[in-house]
Length: 366
Ligand code: F6P
Picture 1 (cartoon, rainbow, N blue to C red):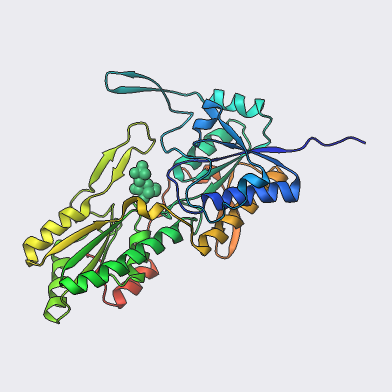
Picture 2 (picture 1 turned 90 degrees about the vertical axis):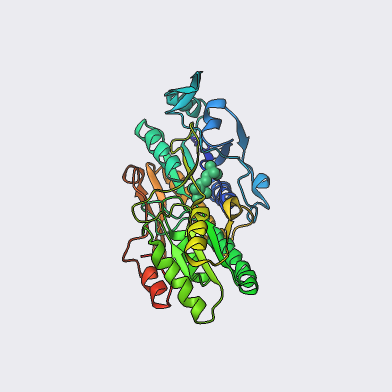
């Protein structure tokens, strides 16, 4: 009788972390081992592990108890890209080179049948490039921004949206007591999903998203109208990527090594100054920052992450590659990695949630 070689797959988490990464790792590992007798090897710190050759055997015991843990037991990086690897520095200028062949050699040496890449758009773009070079890749989309093209939702978003909503609830009571205008700035990069959904859930009076540049007069008018009616406080939920009509987004810092070096943040301070000047109402700012990425995933994200992990293992078993697992309605399906690159899933200006927000009297800044 001919004995079949045991399959072996690799797994990495790339890009910014988010709640639910460990739940995916557990989903892939437990179903790979339990259902298909596939061995799983983890790479540390995203694509870095493929170059530095740092691995962790992902056994059943290693992933036991991690379902509810935030972050990723493998570590991650949003700076490492084997196709654009920093090899030298001249003055302040970083020199990059394509070292992807080193990564691919290591994948072959390790005898990996597939590589599962869990990450955001940057991670998926690199996964696609590896796939074009013959590596069997399965992508799993993650991000609190919910902006990955090709999937209706990403895990991590529900957890971040829940954290932002809780923060808005807390801001509400102090805003009411002090009769202040309170601005809550949330993450989300160029997409307004986090601000829009937490803003609706938290009853924001004004919601400002990158897709709809705002008009300062319309915001001040809303606040003053509330004031006249005896509503002596207002809550504004703003995306880090929001900008005034004809204005620019605020860049907080540049991360040179990153494929997408721009880090947004701080628009709420500019808005607060303008509101105070124009309305004479005391205006305070809370920037939620990385709080939105930390801690335990919501039950929704635990279930979604587990479903995606189980599907990724099934695809590895079947030898299907060059795809990203995706959510379409109630189903977990797949989309080709080659179709995802360069696209971002933004809030369409006719999205039904914008209409819902407007109908309950929320100002969208336009
Ligand atoms: O993409 C996730 C995200 O948290 C964005 O919402 C935010 O703009 C960015 O990452 C922050 O990146 P960093 O952790 O590098 O500051």
